[in-house]
Structure formats: structure tokens, C-alpha cells
Image (cartoon, rainbow, N blue to C red; front, side, top):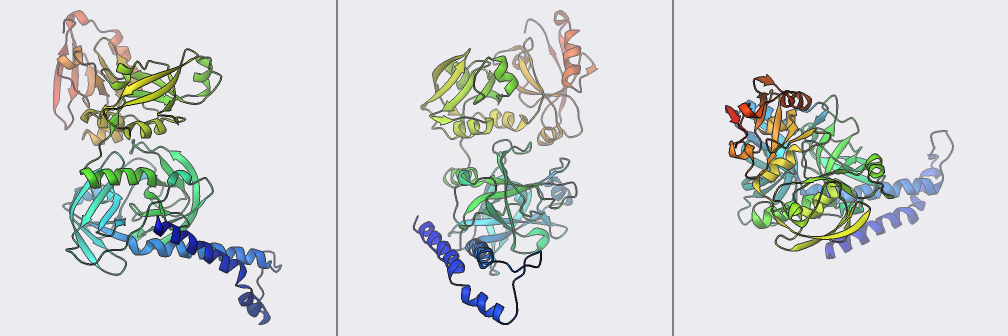
Length: 491
């Protein structure tokens, strides 16, 4: 708190100085015949010039607070295939560390603790056999350990500083306070150009990316390129308000659309990893979607706020609390819910083993439910990563499982790239699919010998199935093991 107060006072003094004490400099400059001209050739007013100086001073001040703590993260990789695997191949959307040497990959990180703790993207250090970190002053350290959270593409690195002096570090700001149009600076090492600072604004908030399901993103037009990944996006007080993660580009370089993971999310994940070695999330167990105008009209609702429940998962806290299809969740523990990612953020950080309040609308009436949050089961993380924007799902009530259309990002995570079919998202405990040995992440490629590359194809084939003879599923387990599984009615 003390550091933040001092930082705020310093930046205010810098701006005041530029606004009120630069007049003698401008006057002297103009007295030598060097007029300040605007684009149309007319002399600019002192006010406009001082405003420009004030903004320049703010940029300079913010950069000075964070540059000493911005580091280069060099991942020494095992093979060329490892380096290629680090590049998430989704058309246009790229999260790429910069390439250094044939066996290395370089990105950016930010020191968040004087004892040598670095925050960066998980994809920057994924598959590294050794991690090297270089500070702006030339000091180099190796990682003694690291922990990661693939669900948010974040990683924490502990440097082996061997009892040496404390290192510079940056502080987190409140990303929720950032608004569209606010100035921000991106700092990183694009294309091995160390400590490059670019300026821009917050272009949008609450962006969702298919690769990273457990967070929303800030969008910025500040230049972000390969090598910037893992570096800080900062406000004009020199506080971290985001971790630069991805760009939307048809060329692989900056085209004015970059994405940063908000600092409030990054800080919570980092604190969990530092304290526990992993991220412990609470679990609600409900599939939701945005409440569109059409859905609001269908449900005869006057308002269009909240998120719509598609269905609670079997034996989940949501089901036990009584959540039902077409419920509209308005708030969680008194916090208004206006987007799916907000509900996800509130619920995963809820205290496990305690009851939490959900306010909802059901059939036009307002209800309050109490839900007892439990730890997220291992399969839920996989479920969360599979659910993306516009992913088509299908509930096979007879076989007792929920399927989703396979997409390349999901197949890549399951190590099943290049295949087609539907993926088992969840099974009903004790149901036919579970008894037959089908588990979460199983890819169904054929039903009774007929290929089912799409949801509609699966439905068409299933409508022709005769359960009296059993249904034969050609499946591929996560990792690539192929099997034939027969499900019979009596199962």
C-alpha cells in the first residue's frame, strides 16, 4: 500500500510539473524561432503542448516502474518437435514465444516478488528441459522449479538466486478498474528486441479465447508480437493490469489486436500456485450460456441480465442445490452475474465446503438457492477446456452421456489431432456408457460401423440404431488407443 501511494504521488507531481512548469522551456524554444506547429501549419496552443508533455511524462514514469522487473525467459527445448508443439495452431489466433536458437525459444516474464518469483505464460516454458531468465541489468539465473496452470496459460518460475540481493519486482493493479479507451503499455522482448515498450488503449473487455477457457481477456491495440508472450500490460501508474498472451493475426505479427489475461485473474492464480503448488478451484458443475434477447423472449423475461442454465451435471453441487434447465442465474454471493465468465470466476474462487447463495429466476419467479461448493474433480478441468464458443453438444439420454463436436484445439489437448468425431464430455454415474467403460475425453468415430464426423451425423445414425442388438462404438481413448465398445440395453 505504501509503495502504491508513493507511486501515485510521484506520477501526479510529474504531470503537474509538465503542465505548469515547462512554460519557460517552451518560451525559450520559441524565442529562438522554433515554433511548435500543428498538422495544418498553425501554431499549437501551450495547453495542447503541455498536455502532450504530460502524457509523455506519464508513459515514461510507468515504463520506469516496470522495465527493471521485466525479464527475458529462455526455454531450452529438447527437440525441434517440442518447439513446434509450443505453437498453438489455430487459424489467425496465435500465442507464440519468439524463436531464439534452433533448440531455444524466448519469451517474456515479470518479476512479482523480490525473492525471484517470475510470472509468465505456460506456453512460453512448456516442454522446456531448462529455463534461463535474464534481467535487464544483465544478470542471469536458472529456474530451480516451476509450476503451471494450463487452464489459464500461466506459469510461475522460482529463480535460483542463492541468497543474493533482492530483485526488482512489479506490483499488480486492479484490472476490473480498467475501461475501454484507457491508455496501457505493453513491455516485452518481441523478435529478441529486448525491453520494447509499445503504447495503446484497452480496446475491449471480457474477450473469450477457445484455447484458454478459464479466463476472459482484455483486448488492446498496443503492439504485441512473438516474444511478448508472458510480459506485462501496465497502466499509467506502472501497475500490472494484464499478462500479454495472444494476438489475432493473419501474418503471425501484430495487426492491432492483442489479448492480455487480466491481472485480477493472474494474481489469484499466482497466489494459489505459490501457496499450494497448484490451483485449487471450487466446482459448481453447471453448463451455462449467455442470456440472449431471443432466450429472454422465449422465457418471457422483462430483463436480459444473468446467464442461462442449460443443464446441471450429474451429482454436482448445482444439481444437489436444485438448479434446473432454463434457470437464469442473476447473482452469486451477492455479486451480479452478467456473463458466463463472471459466474465461472466467482464460483471457482468460492470457499470449498461452505454454502453460497445463488439468486435466480425460474418461470418468471425469483428464487434463492444455497449451494455447498466442492473441490473441482480432475475431469472438470478437461470439461472446461472442451467447452468453447459455439461448440455443438448433444445429450444421448439412452446411452447416458453428453457429447460435443470435436475441434482441433480439443483434439490437440487429447493428443488426437487430425481425427473426426464426437467427444464424451461427461457420463451419468452408473449409466450405460460408464458401465461399458467409456470415460471423459473418449472420441467416438463410428456408430455401428458408420462414421460420425459431426453432431448431425451422429444423431442420424443413432436414430437408426436398434438397442436390442446392442450398439457398437468405434472409439479412441485420450492418447490414441483405439477400441470397439458394445453397449447393450440391459447394461
